[in-house]
Length: 300
Image 1: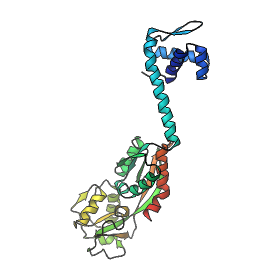
Image 2: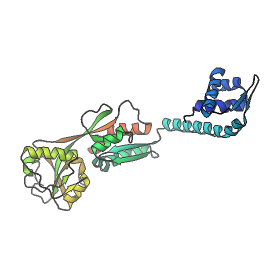
Image 3: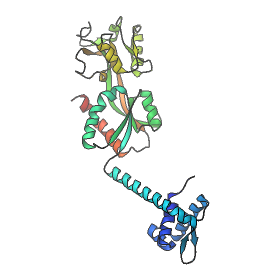
Image 4: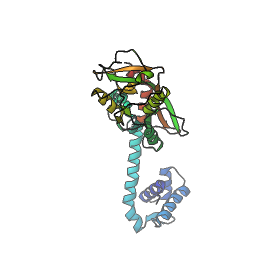
């Protein structure tokens, strides 16, 4: 059952003042509008709450029983609205962000540090998922905005370019290709590559470039996440073709990442949000921070 808050408020004020004219003045509406609100509430409840006479208003027995609860409902609503206004004015609050795991493990912690310095009480809930799942989370309102791979335009999504993330060859320092300035795709022939899931954008790009050169993927291991592939390379189980952001400079001293060329392949990372939807104040600030500070974080 839908109960109109205006009707409950009209009932409480009328019951407390015992007069329609005074109640209408306090609510800044006409007596006719006030009467309609109370009547609509009574119709919804199928109960008579007030006895109306020419001089005064009296509560029915049911009205007397309902009044304390109605007062509490009005008070709670007023308190909630006041808190929301205060949070909005001070940019307080919490929000949910959906993000690629590679961005969540490298880029986001540094940006969150900057954000937390100014808004230490705000809370961020993070969904780390594939690019497809990030889009679904945003479209289904499970997240206010997300970090995903740019894709074909969606009629309900707005995309803002965040960064270009080139694919690189990651290998142990002792690998024969580790000392080269660049590595071409043709040089992947015969190399044990740790592959990521076929549903990942990285794998799709990699398979396309290798197949163009007639190179069949030679892989003993397939993983779901980029971070797992890096760990297997670190353990000496093979090499990997991954986005550069997967391995921040200096993070794994025993590993080397070499630019892949002829051609250079980049995944385009974007911030995505629903069109015609306003972000909460807390989310809007972090969204803008990502657009403004991402390059600064990546190139300190």
